[in-house]
Amino acid sequence: MLNSSKRAPRKSFTAVTVPLCLAAIFAVVAVPYVRRYGLTISAAAGIYGCFVLLLLLALAPGLAFSRDSIGPRIARLLWFLPLLWCAPYLIYAAGTFDFRWPALTRLLVVGAGLPLIYRLSPVRDLERFNWQDLLAAVWLIAALMGHQLAGIWTVPTNLDFLGRLFLICIGSWTWTFLRPVPRLGYDFSISLKGLGIAAWNFALFAVIALPASLALHFTQWNPPHTGLAAFAVSFLEIFLFIALLEELFFRGFLQTLVSRSIGSAWVGQAVISCLFGLFHILHAPFPNWKYVLLATVAGWFYGTAFVKSGGLMASALTHAMVDTVWRAFFSKS
Image (cartoon, rainbow, N blue to C red; front, side):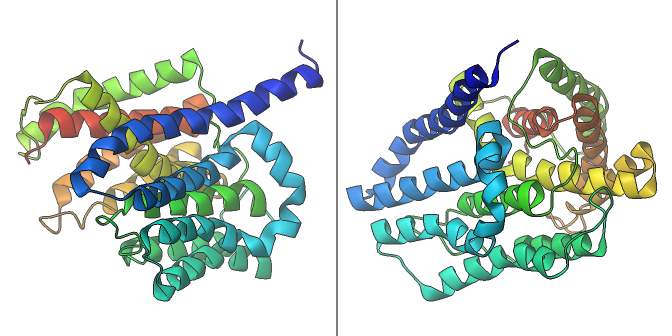
């Protein structure tokens, strides 16, 4: 068995390599966009610096080394967290010369909501869904559905994916450090068992969803016009900017706490799957009941992957594969 002195370098190595590898991949992906929009060196550096810092902040609570370093100091950092989460915007603004007080104010207000809720009224029963958790959920949903983070990063075009990373920062830090959610599962380690669970739940969903979506005329066979590299990049983008945020919120936070409050893992999973489905009703054409139905079924399999694996990686990988295959092979657009 490894002693603590041997484990520490391994944790430190993982904490550094995971974000750096992702940052390097997206640096390559960003090159065509820099050329397309004719970005200056200053603007490119500002946007990329903002992205890398947001990425580091978003991933930090999911890395054991970071949790060991930040956890004991979180009480001293509490009121500085919204400022810390907004720091990437200042890097963006410095490089692009696009600083706007209303944009920074919106980020500060959205970021301060959860720390304020849990600080003013700390949760006593961490195992159950409390009224403070309901307020936190409503706060985040209102920020997302109300497009409070839209139009903040606008150079060279609307970079809304940065807003999703910002929300991951808020949720992951809050539910890891400020209001710890037992069995949140926000950990980026993955095993062969976890990969198998993700693949199995993707296959089970595909068996149901493919014929159903085709019969409902929700999808159509649309062979891809790009290669494997483009598919891999699309998968990584969906995993990082869509699946990770939604799985953190719906499975790690809501399903975990609601299931414990109800006293039934199956009922809790069913409730959150239906809620997950309903969140897709606004997609055109409204009300999109076909999307709601298929997303509800998908939510069940994401929840199963989460429960069986004990972590968000399996459910996020399942989620990302479903969305990537749909967009690559079955999208009507």
